[in-house]
Length: 62
Length: 395
Image 1 (cartoon, helix red, strand yellow):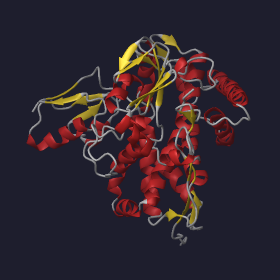
Image 2 (cartoon, helix red, strand yellow; image 1 turned 30 degrees about the horizontal axis):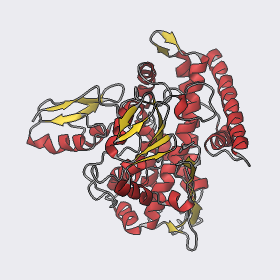
Image 3 (spheres, one colour; image 1 turned 90 degrees about the horizontal axis):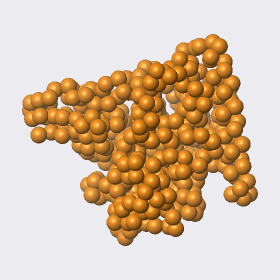
Image 4 (cartoon, one colour; image 1 turned 45 degrees about the vertical axis):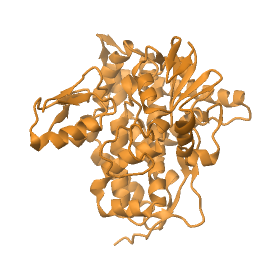
């Protein structure tokens, strides 16, 4: 599955990398950086937890 | 005016019962009228409408017309809208990023334990005065490099702005404005001192910082510090007391956390959602615009009710159930959009460490028999929260 973050929408709530540190990380401003563009089954639950807890709905998983 | 920071809401003071349990009022709004007009003010309850307003500062501005809290210039960055806003956030965001605030954890934990040391043998505590007020204020003073002796002065500053006392609205306003002038004067002295001698603190950092190749002016620094004082002290006190009051009233949840401290981070998020200590954030309409089916006119106040959005069933399944392991929690307790709370990561750190240590050391705390917690209107703090617990005997 492909994981993307919309940098225009992310405002740095930081929920994604707090809950799913293997999939998301912070840049210097605390905004989200996707660590793996493609995630396998092993990381899918983490990727979804990050997306489901993003207040800005900035993360998509397709 | 409706103004959650200065203590009125919907044009009138919230009754104490409403402040203790505003969720019932929000539920009524969701069921009957999720957009309410009161004269020249519109209240938004739906998660989608609140998010829309927060995401469109060009339509719903956070400028000085949105709220009056004793300041004479726009607070930075809250009352600066894009595009200038981003310049200040690019300076400030790195200072308050999760990675940066994580460095404070040992000091916050030491402070939390020192405060608990002060009352654990007594078997009882008034949690607001003895814990939830001094904790964020002490952290704040250390961050800004200010002497701990100024704690009482800072408490008076923030109380005079957030909950000004006066026989008439005009008298209260005068108290607020006078405190505002004192705050500017206080920080001006600190800036002057740091310009002569830099230290390892935030204000020294501001003196040295550049935005777009320009140094921050004295006024820029004062406008940042003024906001920090208002935003950084009261809100953490409020969040902590609301969270502990909820848990003291729900011993099954308290026991679950005491038995498994790994529940604390998720509990912090769910209690922020349910309690939403900052119940709303004000905006002002920049143009005639529709929102949630309501026509808003240029200059109208628009109150984004974060607390109502946080119990919207269209976003949160079973919104009235406090689920410490809620899988998806897009709560807006820290707002959203470009003005998302700058200090949210510091607030989370302080709440997590405080709840971890309170549950580790005083696992059976409960409300003192015969006492009733007292909530404030506006920002929801529990200003009287008497607790009892099994005293800890020093070995």
